[in-house]
Image: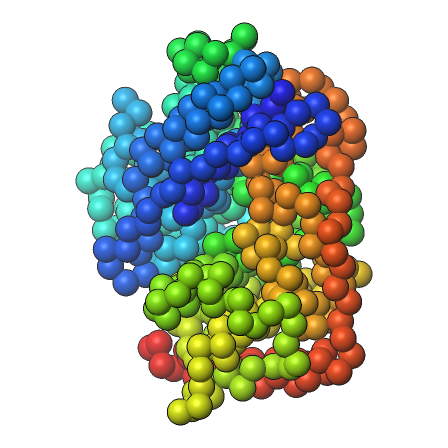
Length: 485
């Protein structure tokens, strides 16, 4: 048996996976985000640890025999979060998360500090990444920065608490702006631009490497026969890719989680920072990937649920499984700013086209379409680099919705596949990495394409209508930018 633990933004999820690669059981615990000031997004790292332990406690209570047989553990996690530790391992402040936009000014500072910054990092400096967050701390909380001994990303912090090992994998490290992604090692030049050194970094490993063992106390707590191996793991997107077996060049998926990702696996490092496409290491050796990223995907539907006073299911049910064409209302899903293609942390979302006749259904449909339009922006950015997927799998919480899949196919103009276990992709991928670390098997043996439940091909009439609507939708960004400023 194998255990995967995903440190998400809204929850911590644990899954048990058997030797056939099937999910046996899942458990999760919620997490809360603090937003004390505009653009800020923080979490208490203790939530991740207590959530992970509680989730595995639940699995151990409900499936004791299966948990007893666990031999490999993998972790995945939200990327970019800055967890700052002093020399004694004490957390110095709340973790600054991936969707925190306060450090936009420090992005300029970083790029000026190293003239060939983008050439070395392969990516444009964005406030979501880790390096500018540390510069913000240096400038605004210098007494804290002076005592920083280690910087860990969320899953690396949890692994340290579970095992005592401070290790980071290549995929998660790619999102720090401190990694030489082409050569898969820390860059002294990038670190120096951010006033740090290698001493502040954890060790590096591939996601499928065995890097630690679970502590004896936790192994005993969960009734495990032996303390299982812990893998290097992956950032949540790369872990989802492992779970979806998006491990070969040309594989692609759209993740509709809290954030949204359009992913494409590549056999080499293909940077294109000018397009705001991320070029990162994959969690497996010798493989890279490109991503377009939107900061509010399923989070947009959750927000609409909150402000409209109805559950997500209640919002979606009246719309059924298909719509006749675009909503008369348009929605920009920039609730926390945006990355691809705008790299704009300050822009905010908006509704356009509201009238006295506008009802909840039209607004809900607009939210789904707005996220899909943003995904088309992301896909267009990948297309501009020469990466042109023929079809795309749908993952994340949004994959539950047949309607969203159908709208996505019509807007993206390519086939969208709903897949089995699409909601547990990151945790499943983490479990696969735990298996690879424990057994030494080849990734092709462990990472199997999920069963496709349904495939949605673009409807020609709706696709044409959505192409027109997308062009009109894109013209709203300057208005949203002006309003936000």
